[in-house]
Amino acid sequence: MFGHPKGLYYLFFAELWERFSFYGMRALLVLYMTKQLLFEDHLSYGVYAAYMSLVYFTPLIGGFLADQYLGFRKSIIIGGVMMAAGHFLLTIELPIFFYGSLALIIIGNGFFKPNISSFVGSLYGEEDIRRDAGFTIFYMGINIGGAVAPLLCAWLAELYGWHYGFLLAGIGMLIGLFYFQRGLNAEVFGEKGKVINKVSYHQKVMGLNQGQLIVIGSLISIPFFALILRFNQYEHYMVWLATLAILFGLLKIYESVEAPYKTRLWVVSYFTILMAVFWAIFEQAGSSLTLFADRNMNLIGMNAAQTNSINSGFIILLAVPFSMLWDGLNRRAKNPNSAIKAGIGILLLGVGFVIFGASAHSADQWAKTSMLYLIIGYLVLTVGELFISPIGLSKMSELSAPKYLAFIMGVFFTSSFYGHFFAGKIAQLTTVREDEINPFSEGVLGKLTELITGLSPSMATSGDAAQQQLYSYVSVYSVFGCLAIALGLLAIAISPIIKRWMDGVH
Image (cartoon, rainbow, N blue to C red; front, side):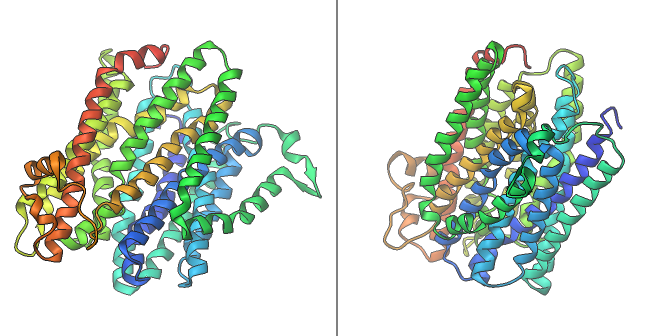
């Protein structure tokens, strides 16, 4: 279909609707906590960061379970059912359901996310030059869901109540499962994605097979994840434990694979670290940037929650042209290697956030800035994202030894686990507190902020609350934007070394 395996069509729509549910709820979450549950900014950012980081930690476990026991198909279905249940339970406004619902989505995403991406990779052979283009098309499906969901879910939430927005997100997940099941019924995947070791899968313990035990164990873990969300200030202990577990897993793989894959594991780690930095800065989008739009921006035609669709909207417009660009450059043997693309992506990320910082130049007497800066900044971020994220997904399926594919894909998704953890820390820097001095208002950072934003450091201590909040947002965005630009330039400079380590993978 359009020069790609037919199975891509079904995975495209399954992922589109799953991301519809995910991004629809995400767009509402911080505003729901601050406006409906009346959480303080600091607590809301903490819960949001813990939720988003755990959502990208559990794919490591889900990928391992798929590799060893379940296969892609069963993992995707189990994950989809759990995520739908989590969205529906969010409509019950009680603390136990709030944290428990988020925990269900976290666990379900762990089964769904790495395995549908690995499934896409399995549709292409190792030397298939269509792989990058296929992942870019798949990435467009992710972002169609990401663009439409905030618009519809936020509209319903504002018009009828928060719970209708969450309900629509759950319905979206069910539609995604429907499309995936249609693909299975049409047998477009052949033998791909089935249970790998049927003997191990059907081995029974206390009358239950391994698949049933995994589902029961997942449900038992709900209170554990709910407690981490509630007491998110202690999440850093889990970050350390997760890091040790990941390093242990990578070491075991390193010892068991042949020489070419040993060097490639270093590249997997490099791309994962770069993506973690990318998401740590980029993912202000669902937290501090949403509140920035709500409090300090003259919005036209949409509310703050709906601004979450801007990035995905640009990806819809640009994904196919980028896919055609990579195909065209491949035919001319001029396609830049992935290490250079990653550096460009980080560089553009920094430029986008510098643009957000520069929006202060347009601030009016109420400390409201022009929405044009938000749109241009998101456009630059989107181009950067298309340089690094779908290409990273594609490279994981090439760099990994086949029998560890889902686990390595899970490792790559831990970049979002670390990224969202640190994104929460960055977002908390935008919180204005009477007893604290803005760390970006003094010394070199203060001068850098003034150069980009046009606001003097005295804004950190004088002016009304709206002016102080504006300075807090734009100073953080300016400084971290400059840091990203510097890292992007460094990544481009060392790209020849990374290319050699990739051992023939472009």
